[in-house]
Image 1 (tube, rainbow, N blue to C red):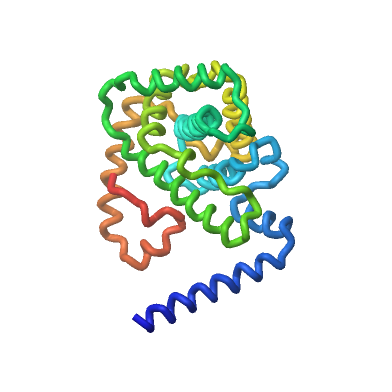
Image 2 (cartoon, rainbow, N blue to C red):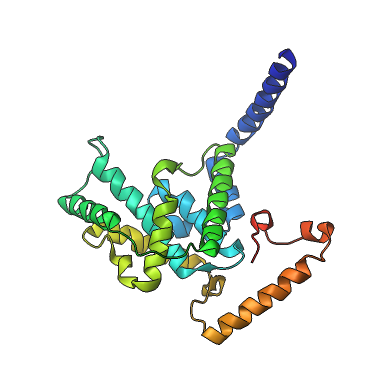
Length: 256
């Protein structure tokens, strides 16, 4: 027990040393280091509320590094979930400094009615689940790095930032009902927030990083056949070669 306490104290001292080191560095340098790691310039984030700048920067990193590529509907579903969390925050926060209009309350009630509607039974999308899991990993690492650098960006409220059930439902409905993108249209403030985040991400990330949605039936069949061949080939690859995979999310890989 005593040796465990010594190890814990050693880790705390080690961590405290790093914190003191970063604290001596100017805020602008720490912020630059964080954003350079995520591949985003602060000038692109200035129109984003400060507490959402880190999630938006992380989202850009996720799109660039994700394998397979992120679909545009996945990005839109994710941003709509963030908007839902913001709408919940401003309509339910007892803090009198948090202002919300009557339109926000109406939009939130309509959102709750939409959530209560029964979704038509659809197969679980494993690829989408894998992609959203990658985003959560990026957010976690971005959050830790931000903390290590003594929070050069404001920390988001993680409890209101993401809902797995909601993001999957939005993604499924966006594929068949694009009008779902206007889910918060009754609130001008939330509509603007969504558009600002979407425009910011699209201005930072090249369209080439998004997976194309249109595929013919024959192309789909060819892809399945190709995936089976790739799976057989992967079985013959040595563990050493696998560890050399350039995919940052190789540890999250799933079978085809």
